[in-house]
Length: 447
Image (tube, rainbow, N blue to C red; front, side, top):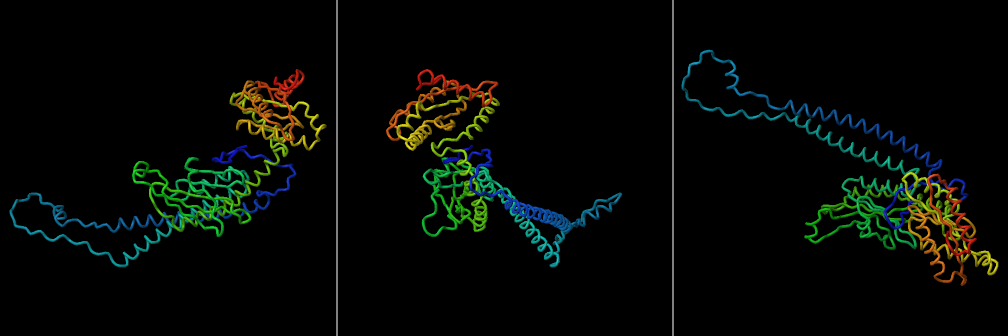
């Protein structure tokens, strides 16, 4: 599952939530199917009109070329015509000649000029109509693509591409504020460092602006050294399903200073009006999916997600011939804590341990709660030695200070590395057997 929090969006595979029993409603059902059908019909009509306009434009261009060729003067000099008659035995004579003035081209009739002007005007009109039809067709396809999209990375990617396709745009950025965390920033045509240096704050309190125009001024030496600097931009708000501000869509241009035209503002607003609800819907779907995959007490992934990710990571390790390790952890004598101070206090200890585990892991490691007091960590690109080192760091984090309620606890661990013939069940069995040996041999150690 791609994590796009506070960085550029990575595109990941979606996960079905069928059977989770969550009371959330998502787009992509019957309503979206009807809307998609209507949009496809509209797309077909636009394509038909586009083909007709293209054919008419081609015909008019041919007619214009023919008329331009016909109007060329085809007069031959009089001297050339006389020479063509020829004289079989010419006698040279000397005569005085006076050059006649060259004939002046006759002005074209007024009706002809008016017809040519009307023809050129019609060609321009058809060219503009063709461009408008192409833009409308592109926007229609964008709406159809977003109609049933639920994956956040996919929605962000399509929105970035649609904005980048607008005329005169070099870079695009979408910023989605996240309460209690850094903003989610997705970009196209610019680096993350360049994106984070742009003004990405939400609009000020009070009336929300329609758009924010950005103009950049640089020192002359900087402009001379780097002709690819951002020179201007345009930001419009993203509004969700309930007309609430959910983020910002910004486009930028490079190379030369210019002001945003009114039609650019309108096109960007239309794109944002389509992207905003789709982004909010995808975020809700992602949140619901995460809830279905998370253990509410520890904040780690649950057993269902563990089973899925272990199979997936084993298949990936075999496909690319990479290493993969599994670490199982068991809290020693945890039942005594429940019996001594109660299950609520025991839950507080589990929650505290879950937080320390999350703080200690690498970003690639996947920690899950697979039983009452049993945890598992999947370590991609890792060996048994790496898993043993992680166990030592986790044990040090748990023992660094007293747990919730002043409790202390030790952990036993079992590690295993994927073999050529392993499936998920075989790998888990070997790690579980190693964990059993660690508990049998005195606990508080890893095998």
